[in-house]
Length: 239
Image (tube, rainbow, N blue to C red; front, side, top):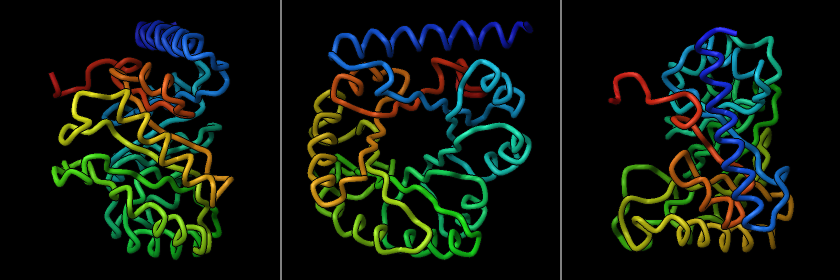
């Protein structure tokens, strides 16, 4: 085993321990939570090693990085999640490799994703990204729709060809009443997810939590956690 693979294996084991402990504390089964490894800024060689170590879900947030990496790993059994803010001019490319887009936040994007998915003869999973700071008027720069806009977007995804409504996603906000209160933020997301499922019972995916706050997300009931730094290390150029 190479040094890099050994490092990734050790990091994965530590993250697995954290998720398992969080599930135990919350009275949940470990299999209720899916780990998505966020591989942004890291090479396709790392993705290959992660796959060898058992990872099956990976995420990217920039199409210019993700597209060549997905192509280089096309032979692997991976589910690719796109988690970044998505411009409509990148939709066609993203639709060619992503299995799930977690950052759906406007009708225009739904329309573009639908057209691209139908053209590519693919079904694309969609999560509505919720901006929990939007209600306070202190909306940050992380994208998302305000909670009162969820149902309109959900209905649009449901009605669109080539798209499947999978659930909700959020990033713990840096502004507004939930700033620094990750558990409260994720509890709020779960309330919104429960409301969404009342009209869209199949939309049962809740993506929340990252390296620093995955325990809070698991405690709240998240079905998927998105972990980058804790698995791959501090990102190049970020300190």
